[in-house]
Image (tube, rainbow, N blue to C red; front, side, top):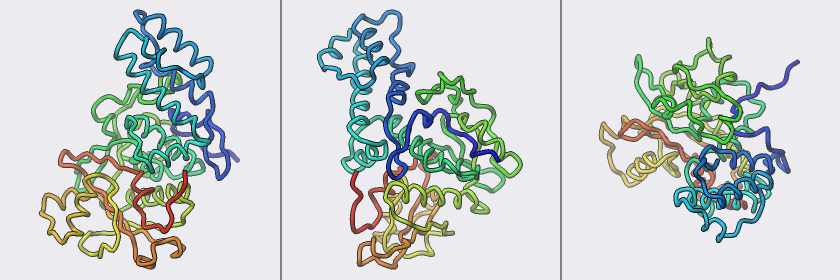
Length: 336
């Protein structure tokens, strides 16, 4: 009997080991993959300081680098790239696990480039979903770390990878895309039962669209991802189910899964009526309940929490999975 099929090779998950609670420990190989990024490979005209630094870090990715050494790099853009990359490297190695590094970013609102945060979310999710054999759940999980463009087709709301739609899917968006020789994105297909089995072989192309409306299958798949994300990072058991309409619920506690959704939730909480254009931007609504009421703030015990998801006026969806860590009504916040 064969084991689970591999996917998201570009996340670098195979370069990591699991520690306690299945959390991912930072390895030298994982760090080296960052220094192998095209942006950090010195061009022919690069100064000797930059070339020497790059070689040294490929050999010892945890090497301490003095600020003066980075400041001596001649090219200002290269200098900025190295400052950013070393700050990220230092943050990762200060923590025992990638999950702890992520929780610290969320807790302290540490500012790092969105690309780095998305890569971190992807590799954590890759571990969370390691045994998953449902292509719809895996595709829904992409919403956590890949911005989406939404469109209506035959009465259904479809989301497709924004970068792929823009024709950029073949570019190396992660440390290992180029190294692994992964294929460029092909024509986008809508995920269905007939092509679901192809997900694993094309998972790094991000070229499958997901239906979010209609039969609720896509939203139900995303609900499973939310459940697993919360269980893994917060050790809290929840049940999440899609709800048809915002007007059918009472918002005792809510959180937006993106900036637009937070704005809409705040408006509803304040008693404002949503205009037709705003309502049309609502993409999904979920009801979250806790298996153990003792973990919830006492005044909200037994009351469901609602999760709102919405697209921008430009029909873009950018989820903020950190909100699921910081925004739930828990009595005690998790420690990184």
